[in-house]
Image (cartoon, rainbow, N blue to C red; front, side, top):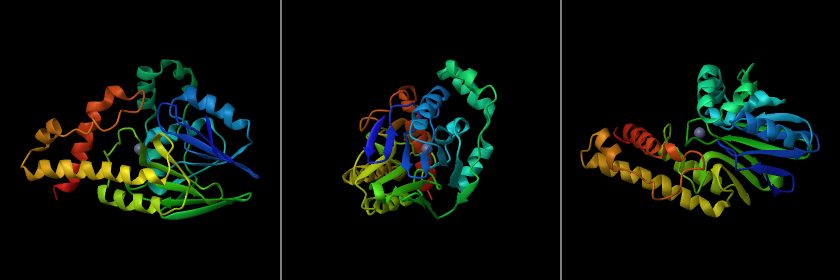
Length: 271
Ligand SMILES: [Zn+2]
């Protein structure tokens, strides 16, 4: 666990997304929850040392951000689209997945259910707790429903998966042009520290590099379309795997990820 600001703690080493929490005078606010149940239990013990969890924010509609909700107290806040994704999530699929990647976690999901957000937003929501402010802002990109969480008192933004800190990026539900716009907005937020959805903690000076990566993806798939390649041909040809490593633990999915990213951009850019 890293302390990245006076009252902000983050873990970047779990399998799945980065998770964090903010300690306010009126209790703890969590940002996302660990995907793997054994990590969630460890994280719960760590968070408990700092107070009671009052609110839990899920920043996006993918299971690696919300599955761990089950292990925590607190009122859950998310985008309306993320709430729908939690409603649609399958317990059976989760158990199948855990069987493959972390069988030791299976005991912990005996009575598992997905905990739903009970407060939702579509554009913006501001949460005031103790002397802290949490600005939740919908910034479409990695998906339509991404939330950035800006905490001005700590000069920190949790960017969710609109920023991948020097690891491969997932574009399988991306809105690529909106993503570039959203990155500009994050850069404009005056925060000292950014917590990406995955990968290393960074500063705003990383944003141009992240934007360049998304732009490279757009350019590469556009070039393939312009050459008249079919989707399958583009998937065989286009890869940006030389740019960054896969996040630790996800190495086996490297080629599948490239093909998914190409498929999504092909669909979006072909029009
Ligand atoms: Zn995601």
